View 1 (cartoon, rainbow, N blue to C red):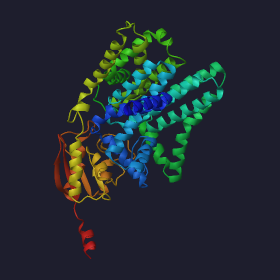
View 2 (cartoon, rainbow, N blue to C red):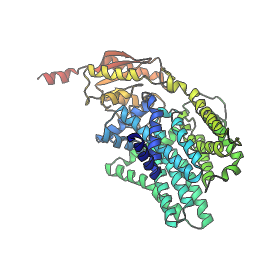
View 3 (tube, rainbow, N blue to C red):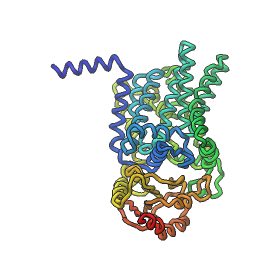
View 4 (cartoon, helix red, strand yellow):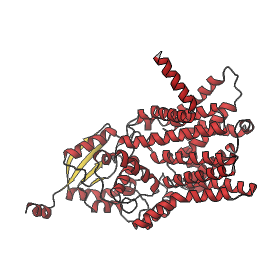
Length: 519
C-alpha cells in the first residue's frame, strides 16, 4: 500500500508540474546516454579547463592564455570550477547539463509548436545524437547549441505571442541567448543573422521594428559586458585581436590535405558533404520534409518550419565560409535536422495505424545506428584515430607527482595529454600551450609560439610519443624541442597507457640558483 501510495503521489506531482518533470526526465536520460562515455576525453576539454583555472588565478585569457575562442566558454568553465573545482567530473557534468538543456528546449519547442508525439521523440533523440561529431568530448559545441536552441524557442514564442509585451520580452530573451551563443563560438553569428533576417522581414510585414531593435540590444549585452570587463582589466586589445582578426585568419587556413587544382568553391562544398556523412539519415529525412511541407504545415504552428529552414541554411552557410571545417563543426546541423526528421516521421509518413509506432521506432533506431557505426572509433576504439588514452593521462599525472610535481609548479604538455593539467592541478606558465598553436601553422600574435613556451623554462614537461602527431604538425619543429630537452631537462620517467606513451622531463637544477639556496 505504501508503494502504491508513493506512485500515486509521484504521478500527481508529475501531472501538476509537466515542465519540471520533462526537464528532470531529459536530465536523467542524458546521464544514461552520456555517462558510459565519461572517460572518452579530449585535449580541448582540458585546455578550456586550464584557461578557466588560470583566469580564476587572475591570469586573463588572450593575454596570459592565448586562444581564439570567445570568453563565454571560458567563463562558464570558470564558474563551474569555482563551485566544484577542476576535475573530469566537472567537465563531463557541464557537458551533460548543457546537453540536457538542449534536449529540454527542443522538447518544449516541439510541444508548443509541433505535437506531443514529436516532442517526446526529439527529447529522446537529441542526447543520443549529442555523442556524434565528436560531441562526446566537445563542450564548445554542446554549450553553443544549447544557447542557440533556446534562442530559437524564444523567437518562436515571440512570433506567436498574443500580447505585444510578451512578444517583445520573448524577442529580448532570444537576443540574449543568441548573444551568449556567439560568445561561446563565433560561428553562431550565422544563426544570429538568420534570426535577425527573419525579424526584419516580420518588421516589414507588420510595420513594427521594436522586436528587431530589442533583439539586437539584448544580443549585444553579453558582448558589451565582456568588452567592458577586458577594457577595465587593460586587455581589451588582446581579446579583440584574438577572437576577431585571428579567428578570421584561422577560418581561412586550409588544415586539410592539399586538394591540388580543385576550385575553391567546389572544395568547400566537398568539405561540407564529407562532414554530413554521420547524419545522412537525418539529412534524408529533412529533404523528405521539404517535399511534404503541406503535411507538416497542418501540424506545425506559427513560423516553426520557416525558422527551422533559416536555421538550416545559416549553418550550411557558416560551414561554407570556413575553408576547411573540422568534423565537429557539423554538430550545428543536428538540432534543425532533428526538428524536420521528427516532424516527417511523426506526421509526414502514411503509416497504417497499427504499424505506425513500430515503424517510427525502427526509423529512429536506424537514424541513431548510422552515425554510431561511422563514429565507432571515437566512441569505442583506442588509438590515434579513436579515443585519447585516458589511462595514459592518469599514469602520466601519477608519474609527475612521484617525480616531485607540486600544484604550484609550472607544467608544459607539448602535444597530447592536456588532461594531466586537470589531474595534477599544475598549470603552464606560458602564453601558448595548445598543441595546435605550438606545432601547426596557426595565426598567433607571436612568431614562434613553441620557442616562447620553452623559453619560460617550465619545471616539468610532458611530451607524448612522436610516432603520431597532430595532423597539421610541422615535424621540423622537433629541432626546437630536442636541444632544449637535452640541455636543460632530465628525463625522469617513461609512461605507457593503452596505446599512447609519455616522456616526463624535469628541469635540471640551475647551478647559480642551487648555490644561492645552499647559502
